[in-house]
Image (cartoon, rainbow over all chains, first blue to last red; front, side, top):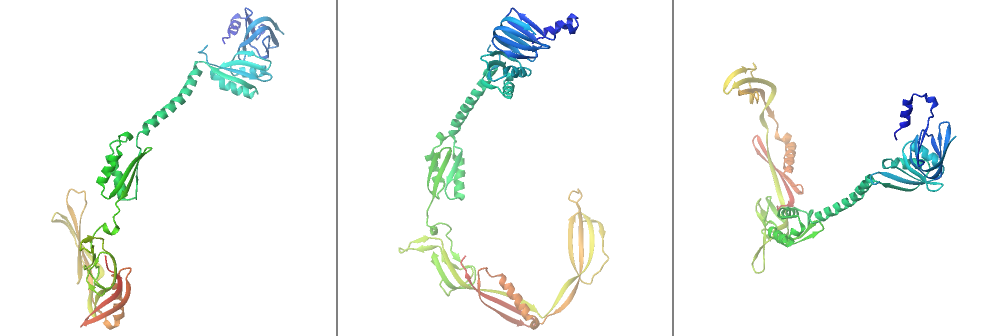
Length: 86
Length: 374
């Protein structure tokens, strides 16, 4: 999958230490694109939990399906109700 | 989408998130969803299906279902299935086609010249190898016509073989073959006759010479009709084998001394172009001449001629007969034995000495009992 966030970061000129090593894109509450995850911990139709650098992300909602899962990208489809980063 | 080639897995097992996370490092997982707490369903690219299966098994997941979709899968599946069907169809068609042909010709009968002749004849006269084009009855007639020594023949098509079964003519042994008389091989006196077939020309006690007819190759029936048969009999006779040797009390014998003189000439046709002579002169000598071309490949016909002179001496040999008598008789016996047949039984041996001055003639005779008909 095309890593457009890395492209934006490279062009922004902001010091990399101010930028997280992961990126999340929520598209209309129906799709969640994750870049830089470190592994999925929980998968269920209502909750998906995955690790990121120095933390963890919990996505709650319903009808969750992981449309694509690679080593560091994740595309979740479903009705996203809530997303928390710890 | 039909064009997307994918394989759908449904797996069961604990700690699936961890396992799938590990698998996703090597292959991309699509449409992952949890059906139940311990059952998940996902897709992988059709090309990654084998690796995915292997990884799932390595992580201890139970694969509940496994199905492939997409045009590539369909194509491979069709190729595999129709390949087998096509192969079977091809094999059936090939079998049906070749089943109509005769592949081998078997001739049943006693091995021999007749059998091989019939096989060759059939091979040459078979118009077609197609079963339905072979007229077995016509072929049977042809064989009977061609081979007079065949009394009956039957031809059958069995599977892909043409079986030819023939029976040779069953003439009595004495009525077939070469009708020639039995003639004596020796000068002999007949001692015993065992006639099998034919008509005798001699009786016991008759003295016959080499070449005399012993048994004629025919029999006469009670009506006086002559029937040809193979002359067959065992005729035993006393045979005398003699050898004559002469002995001289006094004789001159010439032998070579070993001294040799060689003259050589090289000639072009008859013209001597080179000559070399050995300067040795002998009082008595024997001459031997040899000639050979100097080289086979020469255009010029150069010939080398050798004249070899062997020096000889003549010696006087004195061997009184009485002193060498036993030795000479033994020599005569050995010479006579050479002419005896292997199966001859020696009955008697004797010799006669005839003296004529310096010359003594020994005639050694061995009388044997042996079969003389040949």
